[in-house]
Length: 311
Image (cartoon, rainbow, N blue to C red; front, side, top):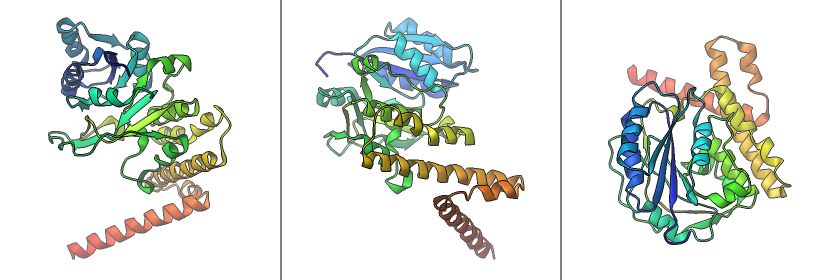
């Protein structure tokens, strides 16, 4: 990133009135912000009116209104197409940026196509902790990125949750866009595809992206169909280019991890509806069978312990 280059901040917003003002203000407070484009994804609250008030106060803010709810992928695609700055930053409407975040990223991203920092996760109303680690970004390979999306197997937070700043020239050169059929894990799929296309992705310690946990967050409200699409999106990644043996193994590990999570959801649904045939089909691979047996054992243990405490 060259000194003086500006960043377009993209915000997909759906019924985001309680938190959106904070998100927009935090983006505009970054000196590097040249544009803030908010897409109101057919909200039923005052989201659009709130953004409209910002457009009247600051010419950097623009509003796009969707007539139908299409999900964050379509909203982000629309915002990116409508902005022009040489760098693009994604900001969720629930979240906000600490002062100096973009300056820290830009100081280290001269050779990057994507550059990201570790998220600072807080609960709503909780103040973020002071930054104590150096940013010191390192290049992330496709294999390492995929392995970093195995959930509890590799750490507390999948790398697919990161919110990097993108180089628009790379985005345009490869005609990138978010998959609009995915409402869960669309970030993972996009970052993985960019890496396969040769993107240099730098990741370092926290610089100030504040990820806020809220009750009723849409990010937690996903269906079995959403999980299935996230599991199976790797098939499209395999078509981008030939994979090395280690990259292939990483994708197989991720598919197994996602399949186990999906089968657990399906097992719960089958038990609730007393569909025992459907319940049995969830044990369809040795890995799934082992995972489900372990989860069932945890449930039995927790309920037994609770019963003993009550007794």
